[in-house]
Figure (cartoon, rainbow, N blue to C red):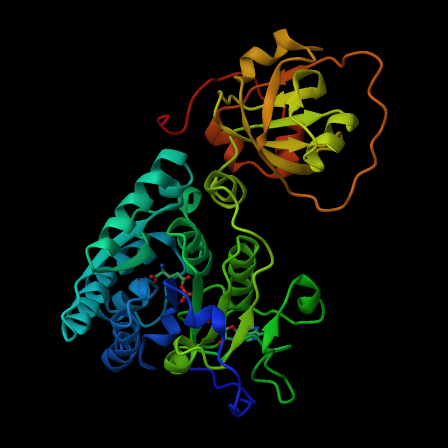
Length: 422
Ligand SMILES: Nc1ncnc2c1ncn2[C@@H]1O[C@H](COP(=O)(O)OP(=O)(O)O)[C@@H](O)[C@H]1O
Ligand SMILES: N[C@@H](CCC(=O)OP(=O)(O)O)C(=O)O
């Protein structure tokens, strides 16, 4: 475990109201906080975590646990001494380790008469609206029946295309999914430091009020545990996703979980920076895979970026991808820069016929998420309608390609869909 160079003594601090008033919280614990130095699950640490969560549950606060550790738990039983680099052996380790992990939680929560329910998700499960609603219903029901959902990525079947990539991000998305009041990220380090926590002189940041507070912070990758994945980068990103959606975040060490959940000043507190968005807008921004891209006139870019109105057909200059009405698409400026995401209201194939049409709506204003924050000037409307160029790719080919490729590719219509439509 990485010991931070400097841990500031907890002084007498006011309690954190956002923690005390949370009625539903998502707690994420990293692999490094659940394993022994020799590898394998550390039962004492699992029990210590469950003690805290069961006490919180007993006060009436609902808890969803997002737990990493499947791969780490599967290493020793498969004779592996370190986390494999290749996906196939990671899948095998997760397959063996996930069962052990949930068995351990089941036994540990049983000491308090609490049941656990395993929930394994892939990005695909929440990147489509119907699945998103389904996942919400399932989790809400597990909570309503008094059990503790233990969520992890479904690493055994998750391939690169459908991976969340890290459980910090998964936890932020689950926090939004279950409409949590608080997200708690438990790691092997007791908060966000302004530099490498092992370096003498690095200071723990007590609170983050917005991106401006992160300007001079050195945010590094995973420490020496060898089992963690994203390091601070993914935790700060997860905090951004959650706080943007109105969910405050506590980031601290698993060993400080009691203090953190009691609202005491420990770790780093990320204040909420935004309001909870409509479900489908968060889904659109963070969880959806765009099915295509639409390039806009300068005038339409300005309208969309400032969310002053819908995207109309006469604002479209080019269409990439084989999307149909209801799909998420990227909205790009004339240079191919992505300026927003939107749920498109028309099929890609319909758009050429609507060239120059200023009454047909391509994306409704309520189905837009601007991704650029800078105010864009409003250029005059173009005098003549632009020509629409259609370039169709298969959805899977489009999703895999880089933004540059997406902007410049010349492949022709294939019409294949990667996944069944929902
Ligand atoms: N600015 C920073 N503040 C705190 N920790 C940092 C920072 N930069 C990098 N880290 C590293 O991030 C590690 C935590 O990430 P990780 O190993 O992925 O943990 P987990 O398994 O809990 O997800 C810490 O052990 C630490 O070494
Ligand atoms: N889903 C993987 C963990 C992925 C992950 O993000 O790990 P960590 O950085 O330890 O939270 C597992 O259970 O092994």
